[in-house]
Image (cartoon, rainbow, N blue to C red; front, side, top):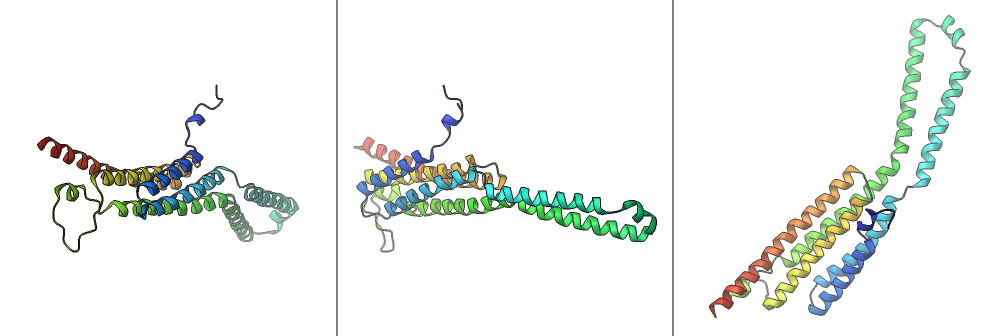
Length: 245
């Protein structure tokens, strides 16, 4: 039995890439002239990059962590050294209250600045990872919108009703079966785009990354739901027409 039963059910980036590559072949075989295949090919490349990026997101950046520890150690050592070098007994006897307060105020300010610098270094890894991941999630969001644009003019009612079209109407040459397959391919691409976003969510506990990944998943789900409504309309209209014959 696996030592990590939960890990056995985590998303596998390699399988997602394989599924997208197979989907690209299916699109190319069914619609060789359609630009949807190019979009899927770009999504395959993005999946490959996502696998590497998600893996890097989960790994610690040891160089930055070592730098943070070094800065913290230098600050702590310097603070202890300076405190030890001060003759506090003589200082308290010679200095008046005003001078002592001013000195303490300056020391506190220096300590606060040093603490801010240490905090900046300590959180540098998190901020770098967040910025890179949010940029990649934004790219996935753009993919979802591009996929939606490819199915936007695919209206099942126009094909099944045989309505006349104007000179400004989009060109429609697909049969009912081809339209259903095209819409199904778009829905699959959207679902896999959401899975790529989920890879980032699974590799990080950063709240901003989790929220952005969830937004991409929700967007892909909403757009996919609209596509499935078209597929259902296509199926229902086809059944009604068959019932009349």
